[in-house]
Image 1 (cartoon, rainbow, N blue to C red):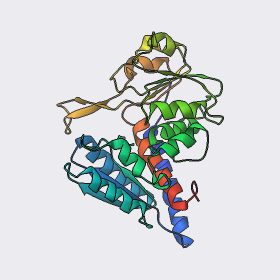
Image 2 (image 1 turned 90 degrees about the vertical axis):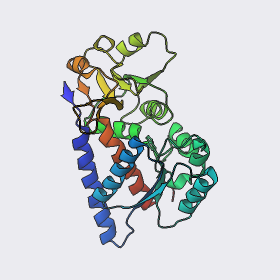
Image 3 (image 1 turned 120 degrees about the vertical axis):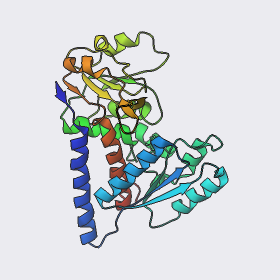
Image 4 (image 1 turned 30 degrees about the vertical axis):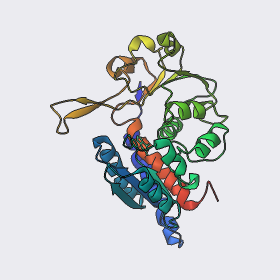
Length: 293
Ligand code: GUN
């Protein structure tokens, strides 16, 4: 069994990006600039956005954090989105989700100029992904593809089960794994809350990507010997022994599943650090104008 060290890969990629940014600046180019809109004070969102700002520093990017109270109106937020769409210095930006209930998330997502949509959530980017055109890729699936590539994991013709059908992980993940590319070229099955006999589907799989948000869902008797297991779960469970008061729990019963695997990602330190790095990769691409000229 080989542990996939997402933290180490993420650190290496951030260094690669920083080197490229230095080269761009040395050649008289522009420093990539990522802006983030954060609405309200959700604990998880605060942490994610702080980590994104920190990653920007590590990569040599400019970052701007725009904070608003939870009572901002949808109209005011859409106006801010429009300002960022029209700010020539901002190469890409994100609106951290979830948003307060009175704001329509889909409307906000669609208001972002798809050429600055470094989250890859705009329907133009989602559509281009599904037909294999260059686009901004959703961060978590893109991070997983990078891990599969860096660990030389063979996906061609393999049976891949994706657990979960969310718009930001499950669906784009399935799409990427079935594309004519490397990694990719897999035979993909997407399982969800209405799938019959999910355990049997999993037992058939060479690669399982668990993104359900259900702690320890994937048990050892659902995994075949030698499978590759990627754990996207990051549920916060209370833990009084931690300073933060919680620990992150994956969707995989790691202790019992790991001995059966050829490769497996831990939680934390697997997929998580790669997600932010994917956002940095998209920001660099946006800065270079490489996807949408
Ligand atoms: N909330 C949880 N994950 C994400 C993400 O990748 N991007 C944004 N904007 N919000 C999120």
